[in-house]
Image 1 (cartoon, rainbow, N blue to C red):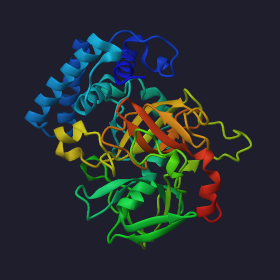
Image 2 (image 1 turned 180 degrees about the vertical axis):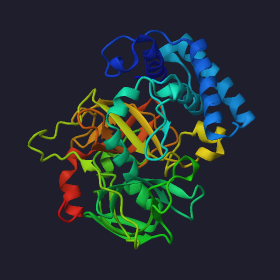
Image 3 (image 1 turned 90 degrees about the vertical axis):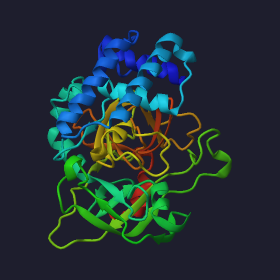
Image 4 (image 1 turned 120 degrees about the vertical axis):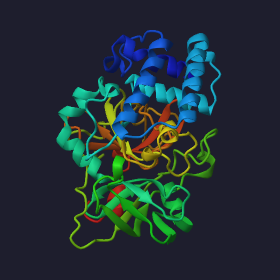
Length: 386
């Protein structure tokens, strides 16, 4: 699917039933640029009021002009729309405000249920409030004092004092990284830690834990299996790292999340299926990101803060081209600004099982995650007793 046709479909969804069509069950109507631009302007104004911060005037002008151009390009040309990276970023901002695929700032381990952009998803997310709060508490920002942004991606609690992230995030927080047979060679940079707060307004204090060592890493993919067009993506490899955190006296680790397992007799490794509704929790602006974070350009106070983005699995295990190991899934939640290491969580059933580990995406709204049902042996090998 081209970039133009992807946005043509997505931007028409809310006019044709929104969430009920998220799995492809209906034909979305044509996008309405006037309505969409009004919603985008209203959302920026709402964020100004909510954050107590004025949007940067020049950034706002660029956003509105760019979004109007990109919308017109999609409406007029559809599949043949000519869209650059900045155009895509501005269309993502429209998608957020339209409510089809919103980006929600996590506050006090939840989100603002009154935000207009969340209307389509509010009932589904509110129904699992207790589970969602546990997931939000378990998601942390990988802090790196030596980096330009001060952080590199997302890690999340899978066991007592143990977190999972991407191997490419581990590469960014270490010196001379290498991997052989699930073992890591290299040294962690000084001061690297996981901050399980990092919300809008600062978030809860005393949730920072230093990373002490690497317990295990996923295998590298065969060089000849590298993705033909996306740098550093190889479906034959496992972009995963398991890290141990240092204890802090009087400071409990977050409760670990539940992960879908390939050896679960009840689900038989088939929980991460096409059309299943999910939500992603993590931090944009991560290692290797190539897409700009428009909202961070508008508001200085939202750089590197925890966000929640709902969406749908567009391909389940075994459906992604060139995935012979059956450990790749794809989703259409927004990952504007990057979302390396974020957890992809089931929004159906109990709403708490982690289905995937996000690791890469491309501008035509294709996002890839490792389906963890396909990586159960690798996780079990790295985490004692898991």
